[in-house]
Amino acid sequence: MSDFLNSKFLSKRVVGLKPSGIRRFFDIAATMKDVISLGIGEPDFITPQPILEAGIRSLQRGETHYTSNAGMLELRQAIADHLFRLYGVRYNPVDEIVVTVGVSEALYLTMTAILDPGDEVIIPTPCFVAYQAEVILAGGRPVEIPARMEDNFQVDPDRIRAAITPRTKAIFVAYPSNPTGAVAERATLQAIAALAEQHDLLLISDEIYDRLVYDFQHVCVPSLGENIHRRTILLGGFSKDYAMTGWRIGYAAGPAELIKGLLRVHQYTIMSAPTMAQYAAIEALTNGEPFVQQMVAEYDRRRRLLVSGLNRLGLKTFEPRGAFYAFPSIRSSGMDDETFAQRLLEEERVAVVPGSAFGPGGEGFVRACYATEYSQIEEALQRIERFMQRHG
Image (tube, rainbow, N blue to C red; front, side, top):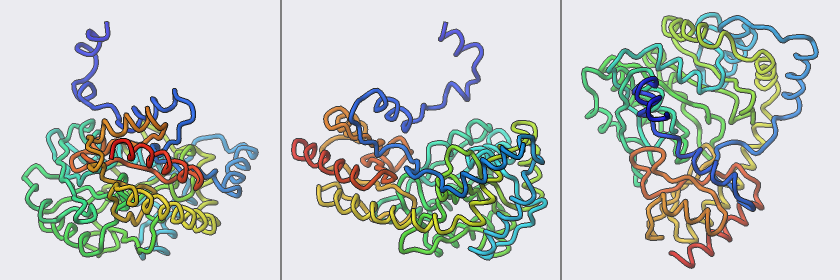
C-alpha cells in the first residue's frame, strides 16, 4: 500500500526529499536511557519570565483572535526599531515586515514567493537542512557551494561567481552558521553582495543567530548599503536569541514589493502568527536584552569548554564564533561521520549529528550543540574520551 501511495498520490518533489538527518538521530536517542544529547539545536533555557508573563497576560485578557495578516503593527514597529538600533537598517513596519510562524515559515514564504520552476538558488554548505528542501518544494533547484574548514567555513565568493547561471534567482547566506558556528567577515559578505548586484540577483539572509556571537560583531547583510538593502530579504526571529522555540514566532523584512509577495502566500497559508506569541515577542524586544546577554555569556562558557575538550581529544575543531555549535573533524577516528555518530550513541550514549546531513562539505565532521548545561558537556567529553581511546 505504501508503494502505491508514494507512486500515485505523493508529488515527486516530496518523495524525493531526504529525511532530516538531525531528526533521525534525535529519534533514536529518544528511545535510549542515559543519553547526553549534543544533537538538537535548541536552547536549554526556559523563556525568560517577563516574556512568559506577557504571553500569559494576553491570554487572560482574551487576546485569542487573529491579528492582521502581517502581524500586529506594534510588533512590526518593535522589530523595525530593533533592527535600526542594532544595525542602522531601516524598515517601514507598515509594508516591509511580515510576522511569521518562526523563521521556518519565513523561509517557506520567501522561496514560494520568488521561485518559478527551474529557478536556481545558490546555497553555501554545510547548512541547515531545510534550505535546500524549501527550494525544491517551491519548484526551484538548490545549487550547493561547499565551504572549507581551512577558510573557517566562510564560503569563497569566487565559487559563488562560478556557479551563477542564467537561471540563478538568488544567493542564500546564513551567518552565524548552523551547523558550523562560522561567522562571515564583512569583506566576504561585501563580495557576495557585489555579485548579487552585478548579476541582478536577490540576496536571502537568515540571521536567526544574530545575537549569539562571541568576540565578534555580527554583520547584518542589508546594512551593507542601500543597493544591497533593496535586493535583500532578511529572515529573523526569537527562537534562539530569546529561548522561544516553542512560541513559533519570526519575521521576514525587505522591500515592500517583495514582502507583498510573501504576505500573499502567508495570508492563504497561515492567516497570522500566534497572537499570544506576538505579545511575548513585543516584550522580548522591549525588555529582553539582559536575558540575551546572560544566555550569551553562558553559551560562551560552554563553547570554550567543548571546543578545547574536543581539540584535546584529537578531534580537530575550529573556533566557532557564533550560534551554539561546534563542528569537529572526526577523521582521526578512522570512521566516516555516519558511523562515528552511530557508534558514539550506541557505545557511550552521546548524541551528535553527522556532518553529511548538512550537505556537501560536512562529510568527515559532526555537529555538537553546546546548548546544554555545563556539567552535561563535561560528562559528554569524558564519554567521548573513552570512545576515542578505543577508536582514535
